[in-house]
Image 1: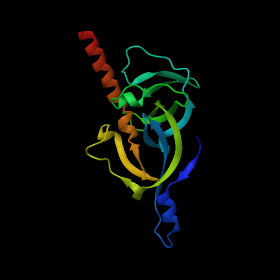
Image 2: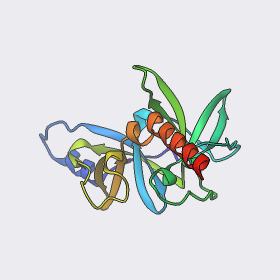
Image 3: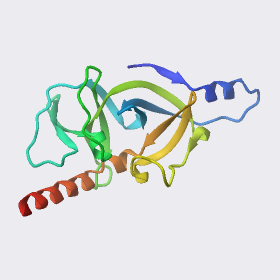
Image 4: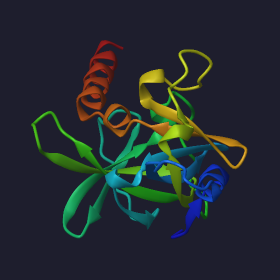
Length: 184
């Protein structure tokens, strides 16, 4: 899980003599439902194996539960469910990626876990290789996508952590779910 991989594009750029400096960003890549996604490593605190999850009643469907991370209660989000797909089944390689998420209060952050099928590698991706989010054709909401990069012949979706893991939006989902259940 701790590999740093340089992309083909970066390797070919490094070979060009006299080329201008290219800014690289590092992303943790992971599999989710057969697709490859990534999150900037600047947001990632750690990666742990999937275990000891406590379910919490009356939470939005995308919240799997909470874990105790060295004395701190950390909510764990089912990213697949957040994207409007079926919940991620827990398999042998399932991990929880602990991500630092900005809150509504300026300068404050909250840790949140994200369930993924498997963690792949940390990639250095030149900013010149990152394309903007498509306005159509994506299987997830376009505001969740920071960009798309082509890495070694495959597309990798770069997620916008602030949007995907927005505590305000997830909280609103929980309120809407509670209202729907009380009406039914």
